[in-house]
Length: 155
Image (cartoon, rainbow, N blue to C red; front, side, top):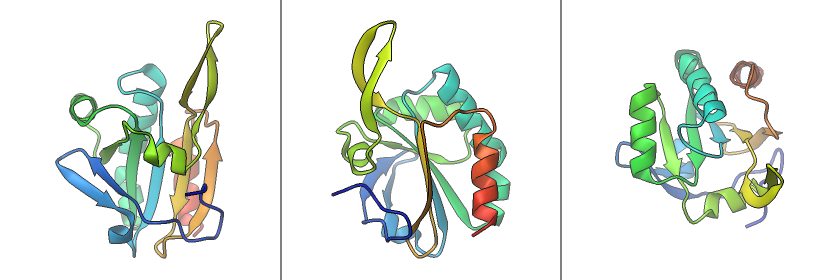
């Protein structure tokens, strides 16, 4: 599967998520979907990003929008992270990187001079018809959730 293209229907996917859910994109038709990819549970930037989306959860819901976080962490890790932070949305576990690769968010990164393949913080807005309407890559956390909410309102 090649990375989704703007204004085109995003191919259906099936993924395991918190609260014992299986997420299928096609089952979310009729609602907007914010799919945000983040590097790792319980790290500072990822915690802040999740809290920001959680604080705006009601506003997203009023816009008929489902928020889903995605990382390579396990369901067990996600459950602990979600519970500890009080996130009001589900987290998708992608340990085999199928979803990460489908959205082309795995790239070479560098930390303290060491190079590795990691998740580049990215967000995708899919409308109620399943079309990709907006994407953000190399996201900076501060103000990002609010920016995504404004894009949802503009649909």
